[in-house]
Image 1 (cartoon, rainbow, N blue to C red):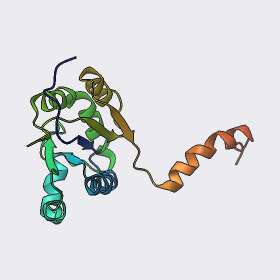
Image 2 (spheres, one colour):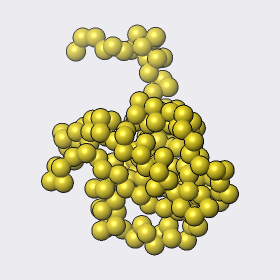
Image 3 (cartoon, rainbow, N blue to C red):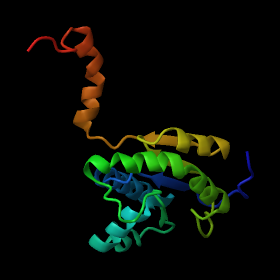
Image 4 (cartoon, one colour):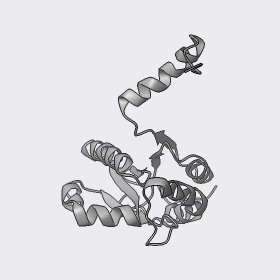
Length: 176
C-alpha cells in the first residue's frame, strides 16, 4: 500500500462509468446527487465518450455550478476510428479491463483525479460491469470502492426472480 498524501479537507468521490450512454447517464445523475450533497466529485470518462458529451451536450455548463466537480478522461485503449458500437462494443469492455488498470492506478497515485483542497480520491464508485481491475487498484491503494449497477429497476427485479423461475420449473424452458 502506498501513501497517497495528507488528509484532505473535502472527501472526493471518483465516479467511473462504463463507456455506454445508459451507464454514463445514470452515473452522471448519481454524480450530480453527490455534488448536491456537498461532496467533491471526479467523473472519469473515456476520451471517446467525453468528446461526444462535449460536442452534443452542455455537460460542462451543467456541472460548473458544483464546487469541486471535475471531469477527467482516460483512454479506452482502442484506436480512434474503432466503431465502439453494436457487435464491436464488447471490444471496449475487454480493452478497458486489459489496458486501463495501470493508467487508473497512476492517475490515483499522482493526484490527477483531484484538485485544490481535495487532491486525492477518497472513495470510488465504479460501474458494476467493471470487476477485477477497479477492485485490484482500490484495494492496493486502500481506497474504499463500491460497484454501482446502472440497470433499470425492471431488469433488477427480473434478476431477483430468476432463481424462483428455476425452482418452480419454468426455466429452463422445455419443448416448443
